[in-house]
Length: 294
Image (cartoon, rainbow, N blue to C red; front, side, top):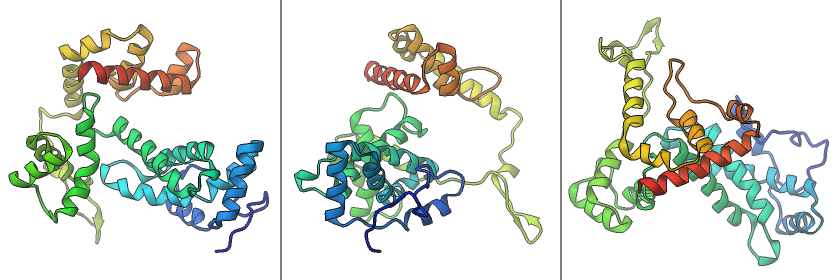
């Protein structure tokens, strides 16, 4: 597709940066954006860098949305919606465009790749169940590299003890950590309810998982109670200032009959600040908790 300017009447000029509800339509739309020539890319980047031309920045972002979609596919195995991964990657892309210097002789696609991956990494670490606030840098490295190392070593199924030792040496972790992470990541998503096939519902986990003492609400309540009662976590929480502590508890450790976490906007209304400021406080507080717990 030839490179061309994205004028105000361009059919894709009004595309939202968020995938929204129809991911397939979004992906098809971003694929229609023209790939910029090196000359066009440099001209746009210079206009934005020297004259703060926001239209130039907008064209740089829109024409690289396909890159974010491509990168997001590398992280589909972590159990998070691809639309959310794309949205976080788009934030990384915008940060890259803001910092891009075309005079260094590097194409935006190479520069932006690092920012997109970094933003998606951070999102996964904040949200994926298997990576909690007490993980170390080495464990996070294991989390993000185990799949690719298994492919390099030709490991199709589970990791053996000898293979775990080899991987552990490469990533500076214990072999047992490799085995545990491999076992956890081997589990795929399974629909709890069956699908209708030829008028009959297929056999699914909902048919055999029920137990009188395993009500989901009670299980979640016990788990949250155990977390709150953890001596180490309580010490770490007490090291935070009052507002940061309340935000972390409301977002991550809430224990009430309603279930779920308090939204950023709800906390923003409570404290009279913006939702973005609440998010910044939350991120800073979680970093302090990580440091305290590790």
